[in-house]
Amino acid sequence: LCAKGVKTAGKQLKITARVFISKSSADYIPNLSTAARQGYNPVVVCGFLMGGDIEKAAKKYPNTSFGIIDYSQSWMKSDPQNLRGALFSENESGYLMGVAAALATKTNSVSAVGGQAVPAVVAYLAGFKAGAKATKKGIKVATAYSEDFVDQAKCKEIALNQIAAGSDVVFQAAGNCGLGALAAAKEQGVWGEGVDTDQSFLGPHILTSALKLVDLGVFRMIRDVKEGTFEGGADSIYTVKNGGVGFGKVSVKAPNRKAIIAKLTAVSKLNAAGKIKPPKK
Image (tube, rainbow, N blue to C red; front, side, top):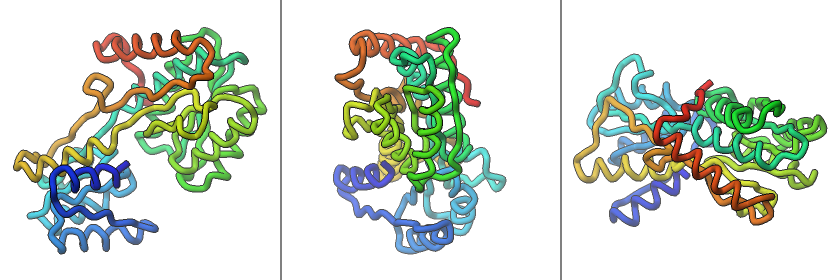
């Protein structure tokens, strides 16, 4: 999604845009430095784990604007004024996944597989649990972390164990690793719930997905620099209310599909109005 935001900005704003790929954490500083030295402005990164390195880069290249997804500028000790954070209310879209799961379960047991316990994932799972419990009394909610965002086998194993214990709806919040959890759901004939982007393309076993418009956050940072309106030293917050998070397509195979869509829409409106406030942890 980050790459999508960069590419969209390049086309729509008619600017030179490049995506740097980091194969490991050792590539973070070299890629940040190369991008800044070559004149790319802004330089935007995605991921909580890059917070420390982008802070160093922002200090080293004060004339370059920097942006980071899933990390707050306020968490940086040096308070870089050429850097802006972008945060998403994952707890809100996670809550919607909990609501949907509670409406679809037949076993009264649902579950979630998270990657690492970084703030975004913790918020997803906290929202999921709260949404499920608020929707159906006595529902069982199991959550676990794979400690990985890449290895699909790890998430698949966790999901299979959750399904064996009774879960018939599995929400994944573990990036590529989570695809393993969704594969387990398909194999076992239960529902899966996608994350970040609409993962309904994986098949009708995807009940719905927690949307997080990271590409929008990236695009807006780039646009603001081009238009001269970029403001460092602060954060952009994306919520259900401003369209930054939400829910994706509901499976055509979903039981009472129209009722689920109506409920998710109603909950979204209550959330936007401040009448529902999902926990972040």
